[in-house]
Image 1 (cartoon, rainbow, N blue to C red):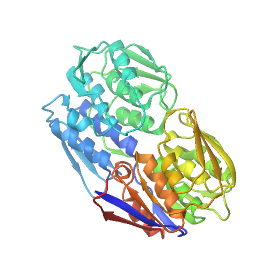
Image 2 (cartoon, rainbow, N blue to C red; image 1 turned 60 degrees about the horizontal axis):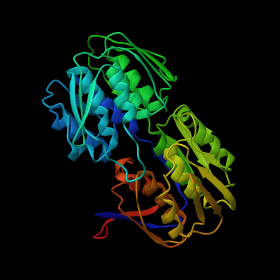
Image 3 (cartoon, rainbow, N blue to C red; image 1 turned 90 degrees about the horizontal axis):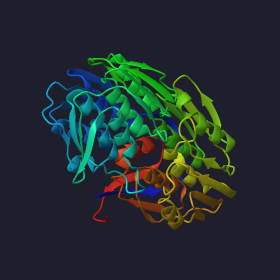
Length: 421
């Protein structure tokens, strides 16, 4: 096991490169199952979740090679198994993305019900109902989804909520379905747009990319394509908040400011000074932040994946802030750990009420999920004295060498071995 030891009080200064988007990579990689051949995915982040997806594909017979320069080479000509076993899928929910491509290309898939972060139910019924509408026979057997279809056929699918996962899975299934499929109330997140653009590069016919209505004209076959992964907007947002909390000046490079409109607007509302370029964002913070409420919403609203980090930020704002999560109502397991650092936060239903302005003090805390881990690191950066953060394997799922990037900006953070769990 490993932990982070953080000595607070350092002001972040300098430049940091933003990695490729985790959630985009986890959709692009299984899309290679749709057509045999060799794919080259560049700007792929070196993350635990990406390695898990590569291992899962490998167990299915796919040759998946991750290179240090961020290139992922995938050869999908040698698929030998149509099963995603529990041992792999339990590690992350995104493994469920193989269901749609396997069903579309081979007419059969056996995929374990997913695992992932410790917080909150994320049912897959939207995925399954949509696949059934496309003509699949779906059965649940001892914790596995078994899907069969001699041929998928186009249909109209309305999603009760704009689920990113369901949109991605159904999109990958529909591109090889016979006829026209229309998905309404589809997710419009950049990661879904990225997937759709990859599918188009592979020969798919998709209209409405970036809108809630996707129209897919099925094709008989696809071909491999090379794709560059978009920048990770959540990693970018996390580093922006880190700079703001430490009252530093940091420039983000290889970032897409257009993907962060809601976050940038709230940072300015909180008192940050921002300058954006084509692929850069520079943030400067000189004073304590102003109390700033946020309510999470599907893209282009404020992302739920930034909620925990914003909660940590608002502990520094004198006054009261309200952080409401409308996406996952129970995503507040970081709050008790922030309280251990001295924060004054109460959770009422799906809202965290933060009474900020009291100095945080170093303590030993425990990560409970990926974004909670990020929030604890941010709080530790400004807490007096030293903090220890346990269970940091969560952070490695979604941030590439976060401690090295923070060290380069002047943070006093170390990854050390520990027997503590």
